Length: 276
Image (cartoon, rainbow, N blue to C red; front, side):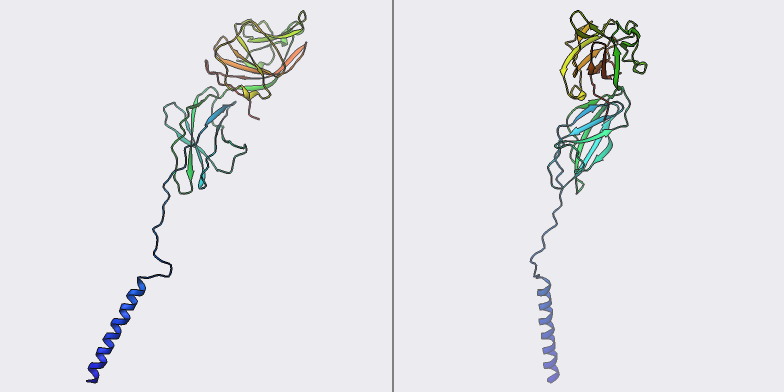
């Protein structure tokens, strides 16, 4: 009789303990466990993408994104005009040296060849935006600084310049290859930039920085001569349909000193200064 009571008590106790364990496993002091939230939202598409043309380089700029989890940007380049972009480089979100703008310099380019650029944004979870929608094309070109031409009436063999052969420096004013030459008209006390080979000229006004005129107009030119003023930028169109420009640094009765840029791709008006 005692053994039956003991066995019944033991079985009941086991059931009570087991039930308590089951209840204990189903509860937690921290409450119910929430599902893990996975971020699948990509950053906004970068905006304001533009390029600055250089001599064997192209600078790509864009406006910054505002996401708190932004990891950086990817810069893409199309070499063939088929809208097949290849990854060119990456930029971190804290690398901007210009307030309000981010930039990337592409130094793997060839003067006279046209490239297309786009930018995407990436967050820390690996989500990536679509490519920027702007049509950004650029063609790098040669440039130079501090060319001095003398008055053709005083030193005729050091008064002209041929943009297609800039390494020659100042040349004779009346050669067939001479695009422009300098002269001072004493009768009216005005310095002029002349052309006898049908190079067209246009005064773009005063500019503190050469890259403020990044693209040449395609119309509105004059021929034969234009008055020279220090600080002014002048765009030119040679007989071979190549655009060029100069920035007058110093001009006097006897000489002119200027910086220049020349687009070797015909009919392409993209121009900018040498990279600092």
